[in-house]
Length: 265
Image (cartoon, rainbow, N blue to C red; front, side, top):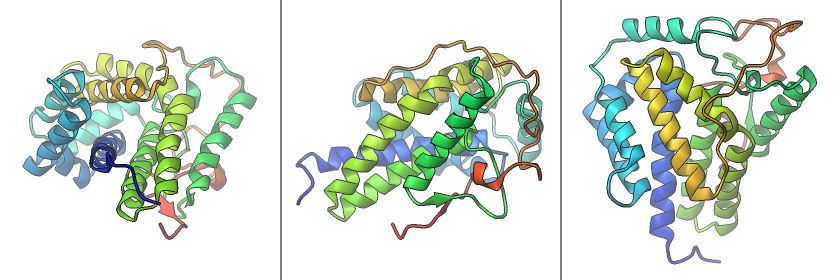
């Protein structure tokens, strides 16, 4: 079987989405050298601008403008970024801005467990497993963007290798994952980041997050969640409050910045 005639458009679209998902993953992870490269180097900025222009396929709109703002921040070093990250997201489950999907909404703890299990099922279905060296809960926004990056790159691999079935499976998974997870809370999370850091780097990153989700949901016909979404009650919550706590179950954690893949492709 052969990939349809519009392969160049499909391939470049998946590649562009992978570029922006990687930038968002790095942005919402603990700051490191890779984040500096993605947002404060000429190559990183050019890659994001090119990706946004391709995904909009027309006159500059919200996504292109959001990339320009995020990439036009004054060049920062790791120390100020780390301080800003700690101020916004803290070292606990509930910082000034909460990056965990399952903390949004008023669902019961059992429903939250189901959501975490569903996320784990998505990751496992594509051969991903928890890291033995670094842990994060499945529903951290950076983990979810990392998974979308992985799917986008896997779709590119499938197209390169003329594997139409894998290309279709991964493309469908992007829409399903957005619908069931990232689109549900991502817009509210992004708005919270923008409000908490209106003039800073993370405020621009929140704007990019919202613009990307709006563009992808429109492309796929997926309903995006509200701009404001309450956090669930934390009363009687015995879940460990620190990321990577020794009390947390390894089966409920996924590595940010290097999810391990058990599959060969």
